[in-house]
Length: 117
Image (cartoon, rainbow, N blue to C red; front, side, top):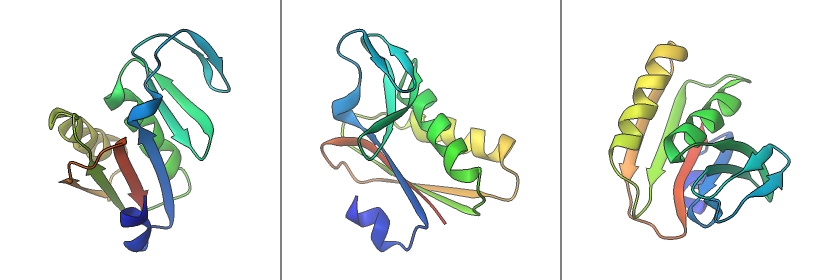
């Protein structure tokens, strides 16, 4: 997460690889099933979605609710490039005037690191 904080991002949320649901469970955001993408901030599950891309969209929407003009996404190992394409399209269509940049870092442990400035 340090790479995102060092960019000066005002808000940071993480979509951890380790938190893709392995079994059915009840979270603060609702029930999850195996394979669901979980959007997590700190230790709390804020988003339960069908996949990583959908969970990332939910996190971006939460981050941009209080404003922002730049979204930075660091893409970890094992995450396909189409996730960045889906996020870019979503930001373009639903958050006019906000720019999204993504970088494939190949980091381990977190699927995505998302920061908003």
